Image (tube, rainbow, N blue to C red; front, side, top):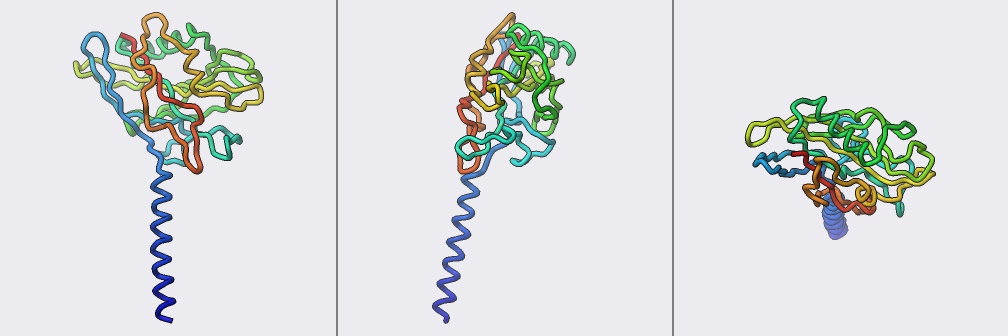
Length: 228
């Protein structure tokens, strides 16, 4: 009887350790940090939420996913894959206009037809609601199209005490049935324009995921643009 009890105890301990190990493996980071600079010696380091969120909660369950669609039986999480750092704007309205002009110049216009109501996290605690609806290179959502949601103009200060505006987005290519085609190819179709320059073609963040439950498919990193 004593032997049976100790055997059960040992099995229970090992079982708990395995479960602990499983959840450690499944851990998903929510916030990362990046440093960006311009050609006038302005530098900014800031924290940012690496995901598009469906609600203002800093937890894995609040990360937006590809609604109702899975890849290889795994939930597709929606990573932030573009960041804009605006050293030029003097106020939030200017910063917003600089982003919308950038998108227009890349062939993206505002449309409806996709889910809305998402949030972006800035500086670890500042939640910004999705700006308007969806930006897309095709006005018909029932076609193959490159589309994204954007979160705009969080204001910070550079090392020289100048205003800097941080914006970000989550872009992807979908087919006519709203199935994911690619995260990474979406970025290949978004390029420098006007005064916006590419600071980093792919910033390798911790939002590249493939574990037992979640996947970010072909997401390879965040494209970072600066406006000097």
